[in-house]
Image (cartoon, rainbow, N blue to C red; front, side, top):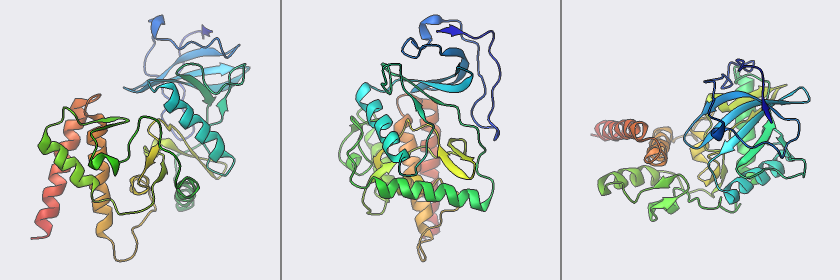
Length: 282
């Protein structure tokens, strides 16, 4: 493994998340890549509290390296799931195995760099919605990601996955659970968990879902509320507002320990939304 000459700026066609953010000189933070012979590390793409993304090349092919904070069992769950559902039409970046044909080495895995654009048209939005619906249909009854809990389970339990409520004041716990209790009863399934616009790319008319770090088994509505083109069932217009409250409660809880300032901003928005709903019913 060696660094490419200088760090270049890289963007996908849709102006997505692939912009170099810094030149990193601390070699202790570099991913160990000896399991992928010939892989050339070019630079840091982005860094968050749960993973770093790097740009790399191998034999001229652009690749993305994920350096995760997840444990091995949680990573195996994600990577094996992606391989399986990829054969059934739910696309994500193709995983580049190690020289020994393993999907990961430690907490590092490598995948293709996807050229594409964010959804722009109604047809693109329909394709994205169809892909997410297929993910949900294929994975009803799938086992939970190791160490994680769904919002349904967190109505009673305090810890699971990115959520740890043990140090959260009781009043705030009640607000979060009030949000999650609004989720309609529906069979749980695998959800992507982070369907922001930059994690959805359209390539040759097909939807490719990026960044599965927050995937888990939970309510499918937590995915649907983020998607352009999804509408609540007839007569349930209030459902979208309820789902937004549930999703905001999740965002607050999952950020509470790792990103406290962001979590508190989410909490203020959550309380304001609840107050607005109460006022509208008076």
